[in-house]
Image 1 (cartoon, rainbow, N blue to C red):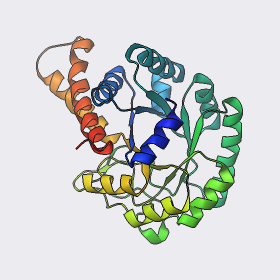
Image 2 (image 1 turned 135 degrees about the horizontal axis):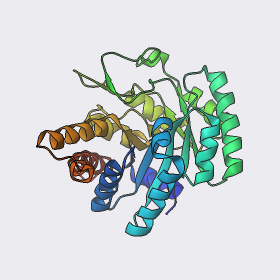
Image 3 (image 1 turned 180 degrees about the vertical axis):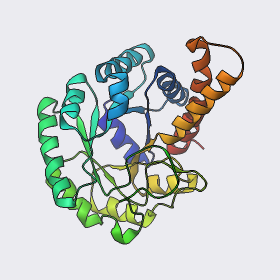
Image 4 (image 1 turned 90 degrees about the vertical axis):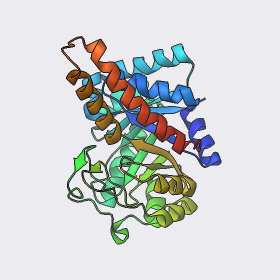
Length: 287
């Protein structure tokens, strides 16, 4: 199964692929294990910072080796790459998809930059899927006190279905992530804003290009289900698993005087796996 086939299958079934970021082996093993239990395809993401820490080629090799070992459909995505040179490295290293993120720019500039990226990256690997983002939703998977500067959840300020249709047609992206009331990160003391489900429906009726929901951490289960039924084919989760990883590490370190990393990391792995399994059940319609 290719990533394109997995996405189209999800779209037909009105389910979504789960996308989870990694920066260490514990989270990687947790995500793969959860997907294996449920027998569903999985997307592993590395942001520019995560890819720099793990190493782009190491991440690609990890996924390749794990697929060979487990037989699972595991796909690797370069998440929110803004540097075209780094995106080119990911394309050469065997990533299945790349999100080229120019969402902070005005629409005209976003279109121009994304179109250039699509042409260059497809020249390196014609089969790689390129995703574009339209509408700024913040940039960091972290705990928030307030809406990130420059981001908006007011529908009047969000891209319209017509904007997205133009963006897709002029850039040639394979996937598109529209701003629909979602935000990167989670609020510390409140749930994230509700998604604009009607807007998602109208976008899905306007473009055939598969839709991707970023900033999934903190979104309600009800909104996830509605958004997927309305057309979202991939859902990104990062902050939630970062929190789970941190809580697992804290618990392991507080248990005693253990200093062997391989005896500390399993608790982080367990916590991440719990979160991922719960999310995958929801996204796959298994609850």
